[in-house]
Image (cartoon, rainbow over all chains, first blue to last red; front, side):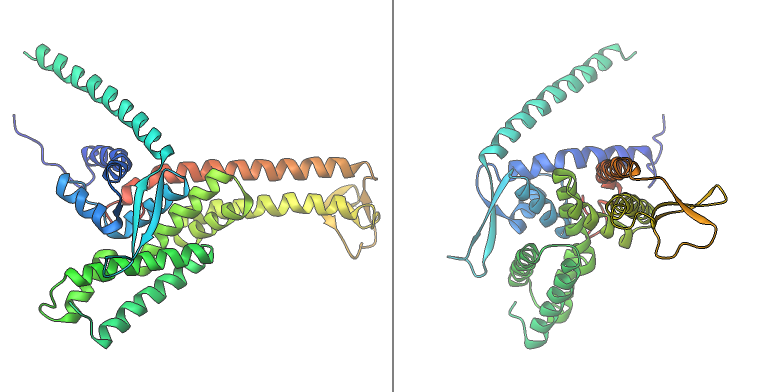
Length: 124
Length: 210
């Protein structure tokens, strides 16, 4: 069977977008969970370790929101760097949030995996 | 890449426009912090860039990837003001968020108009209740030949018109005014929650909020 080409307004595009959007906040929190990172470093980290491309003009407003909601903490550091950098790290509250998000993520993923496996076994 | 005087001026110009755009929506401290962070980002990118084919092209590429300052400001404003309005439910952030939406989209304009009307109607009711004891013959509902013609506080009452209702309308006006304000505020917050949820489709445009 021939595959139908994906068009710009294809519902699949919307689905992919929703999936990406749903995972982005988790990806940002994970990127600052083990070590503090600054904005550009987070962008590069996400690009290198995933295919999540976050436009530069959007990451800072999101980080700002996460800071204001207390999920991440921000600190300006100027020592040892050519320019002052604003480093972000998970707060205690953020770590609890992240743990809960990961629990949900893993539970959700295993359910979908189960569905995929079941569907695969039932295929003619 | 080390910037020339012209390059420095271009960066300062970008940050100035960004700061001015942010100022219309955000508190001064937030604006300063955001501008400082983006300056740090730009300088970091410039440091790692090669001046090829020339400094101007390389610098424009860095700024292009960041997005137009107005768009970046829009993303900041949307994230911060909408989030603050939803989280706190306070009037000032709500008004700022709606002002932001009204000035950037047609879909945001009409709800903002509704919000303005709701606030005006609510405050007008409270003001009328407040003025009734002071100007009992000028505050309330103006009726001409048994037909209501206006509501509020009137400086001139035309011949044949009378103000319906006595002091008993004061608690009613206070109740109605507060109810309108509460309903308006709750509707506004619900709209912002919905707006925040539907923004995903603009993700791939540079500078748009995710």
